[in-house]
Length: 146
Length: 146
Image (cartoon, rainbow over all chains, first blue to last red; front, top):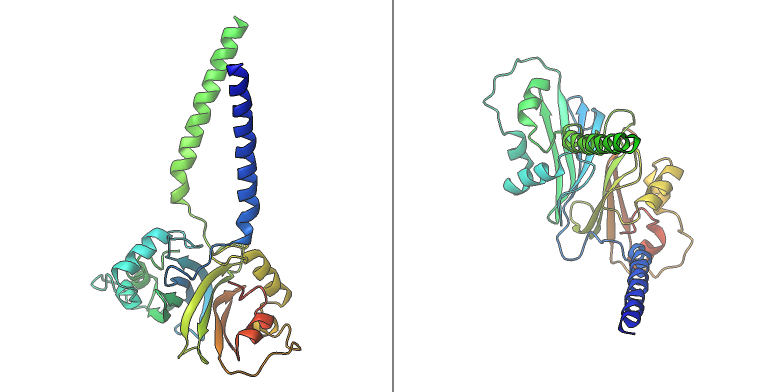
């Protein structure tokens, strides 16, 4: 009898367990993760384009980057990019000026990188022009590595 | 003997299988999903702020939205948002003007929404000011529903 009760209890637990799972799965889309709320939003879109200014450049690549509550987005190295931005307190000029002592040729074949969006609730509009690919390689950091 | 061979073959398959899984797991970070390449990039950052202009508004909420190759991002309704933008050929003015025939009060308590980034390779810089919450409710579409 004890075994039977045990089996029934186990059965009930399994049914309840699966019901709970189903309820959770159904409830999930009704309450999507809001980007506002507990954290000041940190949501960015980064682009890399051929040209010398934001207005004239042809966008070659673009990536999204969210840093709160965790690093995510279409950026392939989101975690490293968020880490670098956090270390620079969201100051993009510090990110793109990381290794300016490197020696590059002086060919003018400009690449323009942009960042738009919000860093910890503060609006970001950033544009930087690298003279050529060499300068970009040493100056892009993890943030513009996509 | 046949059984033993079978068992050895199965064992080998299991070992090879687990090796393959390990190799894949190690190789994955070396080739991240590039946002450029086959598709023209569609990567956006959307914000909702209190105020009447982009420059003066306080960003309340922000979300990222990627539409290629699939709908993703921190936007809670990424699929619906991408669908709506696709139907409007990326024209944000069509999205925010969806239900202008609705009747709202005339209270001036403006909310400014912005979109920045790239839509199918074309740079996007969009700002729209809703006079008040009522106007926003009927005009935000799925795109600014976050």
